[in-house]
Image 1 (tube, chains in turn brown, orange):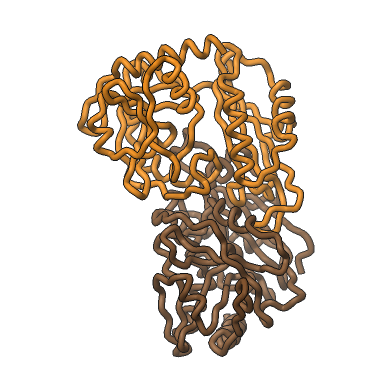
Image 2: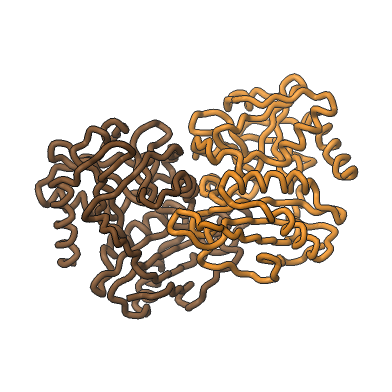
Amino acid sequence: MVMTIQQWVNGKAVSELSLQDRGLSYGHGVFETLRIAGGKLLLWPEHLERLLAGCQRLSIPTQWLAEQLQQEMAALPSVEDGVLKIIVTAGEGGRGYRLPVQPSPTRILQLMPVPVYPDLPAEHGIEARWCQIRLACAPALAGIKHLNRLEQVLARAEWADEHIREGILCGQDGYLAEGTMSNLFLVYDGVLITPDLHDYGVAGIMRQHLMALAGSAGISVEVKKLQPKDLLGADEVFFCNSLIGIWPLRLLEQQVFIPGPVTRRLQALLTESYCAC
Amino acid sequence: MVMTIQQWVNGKAVSELSLQDRGLSYGHGVFETLRIAGGKLLLWPEHLERLLAGCQRLSIPTQWLAEQLQQEMAALPSVEDGVLKIIVTAGEGGRGYRLPVQPSPTRILQLMPVPVYPDLPAEHGIEARWCQIRLACAPALAGIKHLNRLEQVLARAEWADEHIREGILCGQDGYLAEGTMSNLFLVYDGVLITPDLHDYGVAGIMRQHLMALAGSAGISVEVKKLQPKDLLGADEVFFCNSLIGIWPLRLLEQQVFIPGPVTRRLQALLTESYCAC
């Protein structure tokens, strides 16, 4: 059990970062948030793959990155249960927005306790609301878990009620996108459907993992443009990310939803997949 | 003359920032880049006003900010000529994207030498190119000089040729927006025109200052949606920001432009305005 936050920068136990880092100046970096459970780092290969892909899209060199991260993570204290946040930035330097000729990425590891939810949202479902802000259509950045997260900050600032656990975002084009901190799935007649993220949103590792689990279990999966009214008419709705797993939607403003059989089956498949990995 | 970078965080001379700062995690902050010339901080009231307005739009408390910044800036070493970058972030804390109940902003000051351009771009004009990436339509963030600058990083990464000093960006809607690090003005029949920034872009202090100077000098000014072909047909084109002042466009890919009388007059008015302030 991790009790407080422990942090490392490029393998050194420190709690600060250079003011010259492009992660601060421009949000020029990516991050991953991983769950550690039963002493295992869940879905690490998938998180690493996305992290490297994000770096490549942002011109952050990756040739030594996987090896360096593996080394630094192997040196972490042994933990049964916790959260590991990994940030990789483009490092220091460059003239203005321009990258330096040989960027030297900064690797940040943060080991934290798992958030506790005494009201068991995975079991009982959560209350959610619609967000007013719409995600900009930005195909060059869509899918990447990058450090430019002001839209999520503004979305989360739209409500203060502690009972509301998630806000649902649409894109500028009016289609469904995701939650402020999660991806979104609908179930229609036994088919699992998640919004297309070509233009905005974070292509979540849990989203990808659940699609694979569903496919293997014979549940049909579709990725497509969805309208807000599609959500209102769905048989089941749930949110997911690597920390929370699956949280069913129970109440959206005035409308009641019932956590249904496909959601429950995916929760069970998810737990099994953890045991197997 | 500043020779190397000097830095302060909340009034202390340090070179690092907490890894927990929301400026790093989410780009939750704003910045200003000011020119110091002849020992004077140019256009400081205007920069301060935009900084406070940006903070308010991002839910960063401003009640003590102006006073704190003034105090910390009064304690800076006396400098004849330099660049002052001010970053204000939402500070540490919060649960995920959610702001802490009482955010405590982080104030960063960075005092740097003025970049030197031996080829006198203000006099001779510059070479520019079109950028492929388009700025996302994001009205909730448009105009703010915030720390989410990945679009500019990607735009600036589109070329390496040292002779090309600026790239011109359009929005997702196809209209002209700005340069990667500057605002854009066209001149048509003696009228000064700059792109509307309702949906994207940074509402530059130099842009605003030049519009005011032009207005006072009897030059008509228009802010409107402009197409790329409008730029190609303009009598004069120039870029501006608080550091470079005014850089006329001389060459855009194959097309030659001539720094013209309105551009020259504004350069003169700008120099006069500095002497007067």
